[in-house]
Length: 514
Image (cartoon, one colour):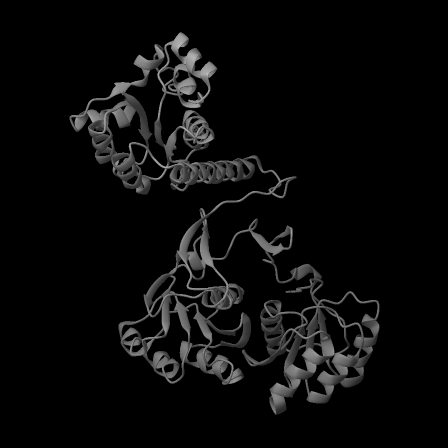
């Protein structure tokens, strides 16, 4: 008689699987709750203690860590010495191992979970058993995913055993499963210990949200993964109310819109994004006014773009949004009237994210894959330090200019470098995006701003190495500039500002975005 060991925290399908195995002539071995569930179903099962001759001990911490179990799994069936040793030791081979691990993830995600509870949900025997069975996949079938039960049963029923291909695939799933499990434990303990998570090795685990039709381009394969324990306010927590499935570019662009929206906190704001760059930002006393300001920055680019806001979308604003094609609208909520209007277009995606105003905490990572490696850094969750913000010119910014300068700096933080943003009266006039030199970015933004640049504020994501950007701003009528400072030629830009009556603010904090 062949043996199967079953011990699962997720009992989905386990009774049906156990019943089928008995019908196929298997003896079942189990532990604790799994054994109780199988017996309750009226099926015969043997407690592992009868196999080991040793009782469970230490509150169940030790159950399966015994040679009678592991020798039965690890013995190579085509090795005569191994099989003779099993006979001498009176150990019966174990042919199937179906185990899934203590619910560590579910435990640490519980509100108010204690450290002690988390530690008790670190599985020891389970990973040892499935790794052993996976190593012996030539002879042993190992299952960690209940969706594989039916395939295993079908193959045994048809051929008397599982195929070598299936056993290899199940082996690979085991090590993927334990790698993710251990990475999650490692990350949790590093946080608890207050240790640097950018250690000598860097391992994180994510779980799939969905497969994508394609990636950035149709010939690229893609999938979307969620960070385990993702914070409120993240795109992974959004609920899609309407429209087609999100694409790779949709998700990337919407995330860019949210990142900029977070900068405004509780201030009512509308962010319009195209190709992950802001193309319009508006603030105001009403959503309608803020949307109009964001839209009018660049009515061409916003077409087919992403719009994000931190207040409920109302009927009046929905009617304006409905006038053009938007790929995505994401907001904390939509009024019933707004939904009725916006859902008339089948292709617009409507995303509801009630926690959209939740600011991300410190300690998250920004990662970029490079050929053969990975760049890891902390997220850019600062704008500037109040203590380092200083006016360096004779001219002083007015109260409105200071507001517009800070808004422009917020926007420009999320613009691909080299970047320049021009703002006036709570709205963007134009954005110069991703140029290979700063003067081109400035000229692009100032030209798009036109006559409205007079009296506007201009922001730069990095310092001015030469006074050319100041001179271009002066020619356009800009009256306030905000930039990090820090160039050895800062004095040139300051002199150019003084010459043209422009106030200049240094932030002391650069915001490159590549």
